[in-house]
Image (tube, rainbow, N blue to C red; front, side):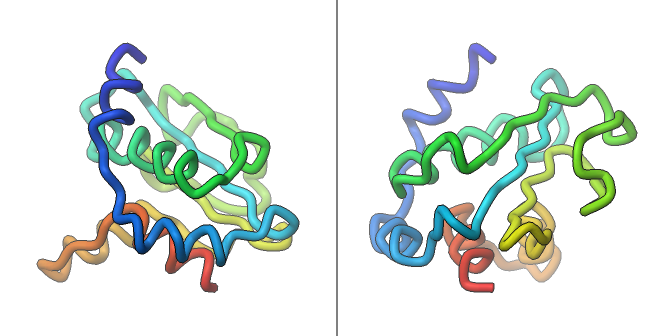
Length: 130
């Protein structure tokens, strides 16, 4: 993961959105699962994963509130298969009170599909407001 920390350091999230995330995040009800394939050229791995971790850090979301799973393929067995399905890697799943409520990557892709864009921190804020 030699690319990880340099990518974290260069990303500058929107401070206004970070402030809103701090207000919306609940350690008691929110949890995040990050599934990545760091050795591939799949969309998002070199950017979205470290950018999301930077947003977590700046928002005060503790490491105890998210798990990171490295996977060779989306068909690999993973914990919580009974709660959600991974269709592509990377996958960033937002849980609220034990239920999957949001996919950050799917949201980013949906905006791109509409010729629009949204930052990773804006997608996280949308998830927290669900």
